[in-house]
Structures are given as C-alpha cells and as structure tokens.
Image (cartoon, rainbow, N blue to C red; front, side, top):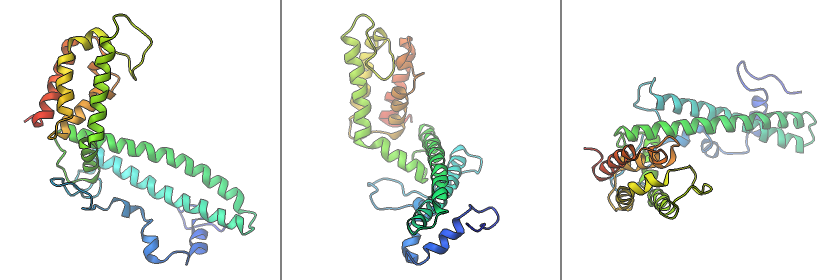
Length: 254
C-alpha cells in the first residue's frame, strides 16, 4: 500500500521522493525544476534583441499574459509531479511491487490530461504575447513576448507567410469558377485578383532584410484567421487591411 502524502499533496509523490533519493545529484535535480525553464538567457539572442525577464514579470497581476503565464507554470509544476509518480511507480513495478502497476496506469492517465491542459495554457500564453506585439509592445522585456518576437522575425516564418500569399494569388489567377478547395481556408478569387498588387507589396516587405515584428504579426493574423478579410468578399476591407500591414511592416505604424 502507498502511504498518504502530506495534506494537499499528490498521493505517492512522497514515496517517489524517498525511493529516488540519491539517483541524481543536487545539481542534476535542479535542472528539472520548472522554474529553471523560465530563466532568461542572453545566449543565442541576436544583436539588437531585448534580454527577457521571466514570463509575467513586470505585468499587472490581472493582465491576460500574466494570468496565462501563471496558469501555465502552475500546470507545469503539476505535470512534473505526476510524471515523477509515473516514473517512480514504473520503477517500483519493475522491482516487483504489485501495487505499483495500477498507480502507474492511473498517474499516466492524469499525466495525459495535464499534457492537454498545459498545451492549452501555453497556446493562450502565446496568443497573449502576440497581442502585446500587435499593440506595439515587441520591445517589452518579457520572455514570452521576446520568444514571439524572435519567431516572427525569423526568415522561416516570414517566408512561409509570403509563400502562402503567393499561392493565394496564383490560385486566384488560375480559375474563373469555384473549384474544390485547395487552400487551408476558402477565399473569393475575384477579391484576391482585385488586390493582387497590394498582396505583392506585402510579400516583398515580408522578405525584406529590415522588417517590423508588429507588421509580421498582423500579416500572420491576416493569413491564419478564418474571419480575416483575406477570406471575405469585401475587396475594400481587404485593401485597407493590407495597407495597415504594409505600414506596420515598413515602420511599425509610427
């Protein structure tokens, strides 16, 4: 039988801690602390980038990014605790302890649920960080914001967005009647043909050497959101949005 843990603790965690004591040195164990995952690092930052502080630091406690970061960190700590139970009970089962099998199965089920929840929290954190970039906060020294800034400015991200827009122009020009959908989202060929020139301007700016992360974020939202004017029937609305994207890509909207 597994002895009960401390009040409020996960059943079996205290046993795992006792059984696994001595398997790792103190320095090894420190690498697995969740808090260490969010420590800012200056290594690998490009020239001109902003050193980041831990996610949520420097924000109001009720800010969406602060709440999302806190939820992700809390769930991450739970994930690590349950993963420890899974590993410890698996080791115990190998050593012949009959009770460890059911415990390992139960903990694995909880771990699967926590994995899904953690992914949702991390996605929410990512969305909130991108919103800050769109609001002009790409220079805020917060780890989540700086991760998205680097991702948006990466050549792979910009080239992918430019390629999607090129495909859209090519597909719109090659058909005069509806065909089975070949793009991720349905679009109106006539609308795309009407703004092909503006789309090419954005494509060129996305591939330029000097580009603004805020503009890339707006272009990404234009391409990825189902309710984007890119997939609507209003050419004027799409032309206006492309003008905003172009302005942000050129000078950040200043």
